[in-house]
Image (cartoon, rainbow over all chains, first blue to last red; front, side, top):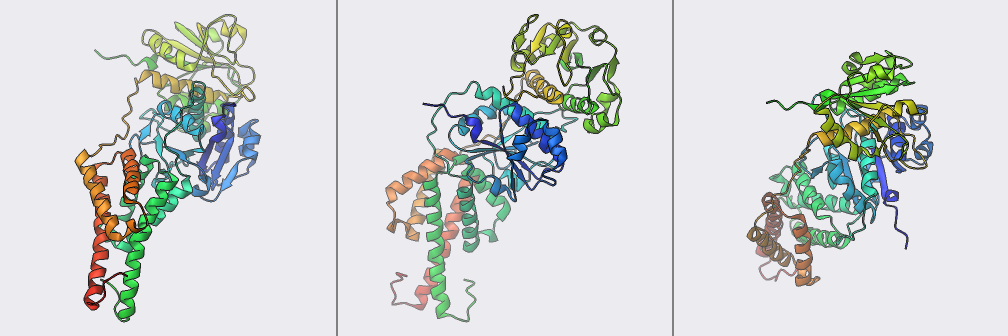
Length: 258
Length: 258
């Protein structure tokens, strides 16, 4: 039986990269450590001769790069997303060091697609983007100069991955996590249902959804669990909708603000 | 007694660097990890605007860089020299991984000056240069693409130094799990709410509650999360009840089996 190569399941996703040279340097950093799947979310310039110049022989990584119009497109089919962050703590997810996190990434990648998500040069990832991840990773830097180049971050993470992969043992997980788009589908359904129920009249929707994302992302939802939760939401709102409709039929001039 | 900062005793020495951009990128990589002493042995172009452009704010490292005419000049006063090598074995010295070597470097640097020696972009260090070192360090790379940029090598080594130096206790966003009885209170509320919504007409209640317990127990629910989830259940059932009551008032003879 062949041992699967977990690196085949790992994609590096760069969000809104400004300088094409950084994309090339990131591709080179990836390839030196054996990573080859690059996803680019709305890069400012790509393809670009500067990217190829900085790739210095990792042109195949650039050539096969998948350019995406949204983060959800880049995370299609992914079951575990790790987001780079400059913060040591985050409202929505746990934050670990590369050394702590990369053995987990190798383990996850032995079972399903994994994404490593890097933000823009200037401001990193948005809160919305962070909310798509199951784990944050912080590279500790000089407090007086934390200006880690994006390709340098990719290099450090890819290096830690390489070290972790050489000492990796397959352990089967008890949970079979659902793909990214299924989980996002649940969040959208949940938000809509809460809105319909009038829950957001007393709660801040953005903050509440962040809290709920944090909760469910810790749980690593399975497909069947998503089905159950969405089933509950459907029943809750369908019953409401049915009663409301019936009431409205009887009171055509009432606006239904019960 | 002040603990001496071992990084003050560490110099990064780049030998015969061809591209000034690499010198700037190396300075940036050093500074992000708290290193600041740069020695340049016969650089082809220095100072150079490209070096400053790539330093991206680490200009002070470039400004204070010591340009030397020979390796011996760069190693003046140094008691322990570590040489980067692409080879896993070397005729003259022991070769270790960065992870093995950097704790040694920190240890040495707490006592006397230490140099980290990097060769040229094309061919690395000469045998003569290697002979000046006490230890070789090899960053393991993809056998099919070992083209590690010099600034990327500096980044990996400086990162490992930083990890070794701070006995690195990063506080992760720990979950504060709620007490047992709070979690049980949620399950009871959930079961009651699902019953009221009519969810159990199509689902086996025992099995469904088992599934939901499994999900939420994986998440290790916090107190505030339990409050949010119970808030949602309260709103959902109150909304239903309100609509139902209003309908019943208008249809006193209807059993409400809508």
